[in-house]
Image (cartoon, rainbow, N blue to C red; front, side, top):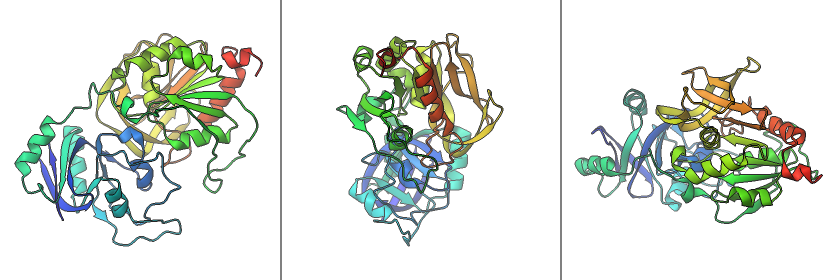
Amino acid sequence: MFACLALEDGRVFTGTGFGAEGVTTGELVFNTSMTGYQEILTDPSYYRQIVTMTVSHVGNTGVNQQDLESDRIWVSGFVVRALSPVVSSWREQGALADWLKEQGISGITGVATRALVRHIRSMGVMRAAIACGEGAQDTAALVELARTSPDMSGANLVDSVTTREPYNWARHSDPQWYRGEQLDVRGPLIVAWDFGIKRNILRMMADRGMRVTVVPAQTSADDVLAMNPDGVFLSNGPGDPAAVDYAIHNTRELVGKAPLFGICLGHQILALALGGKTEKMHFGHRGGNQPVRNLLTGVVEISAHNHGFAVSEDSELGGAEVTHINLNDNSIEGIRDTERSVFSVQYHPEAAPGPHDSLYLFDEFVKQVHNSATGPGRSRGR
């Protein structure tokens, strides 16, 4: 099946289609992870994006039900250098191409991904269109479709990925992948705002004895406080953080009233709530090999990332301090305000996929919750 990837600047790449036939658009980005394509595909933070993998061979381990980070594929399209013709893994429950087809997602293989990634690094992320099968030959129409597709800047995509109803989470991680004791004690109650949350974040909190209730993104601050949480979590998610105005407002209402921990989009929303600014990055950070320096300890963590926006370096953060920076471009990767018991990181300590250098941040959240006197749940002696 002939396939075409057309960029809004007129650049065109051709290849062979796999997955679903059809035409789709999205923001074209790349991910440098060597493994974990299934977790990447099901991460809601990739909603309305076409993801290019820099690793040359993809699909050799197939897919399974254990590695899902949500209940569906969220990417708009998938671009690889070579789709493996063989699936071989003791955990495999199906082939990547079949799974994409079942979920209506188009992929393209045989693309010169090195040239494509160099182009994105030079020109920046941009809108693109993928056509598999019918329509793939009309490159001029595809370029025009890419140019007229929605832009990521100013886009509130959280409403499209958040849960519709609250739910409780108590499932642990698989002990063969994560070290440490898994606690089943009746621990602190954490209310997690779902801006596009990954399941491994929930597993990491459950492993540490936290009782987690996940709520829709538009749940008000008053409704969160009415649940008497010991701590509140701000999740990852897609789109432009500045466009999620209700989340910024609700977070601002909670600062100083409950311990807060944010990851990725949650980090950006916290920074905006504290008075900071965010900006669109040239091509973002996506992968499992980003070096981040912890300014509090001096330790360098190799970390997992997935973001196209960042907190501006000239942000006024209302007294909060910068705790982590990216060693590739010096962008802000973490902030905290100990007086008001809030902290956040831009990267993904839960990884999935990626290294486990930053798992300690979940332990820090536990300590913050237990040590804080501001949590309404703790004031009731829970």
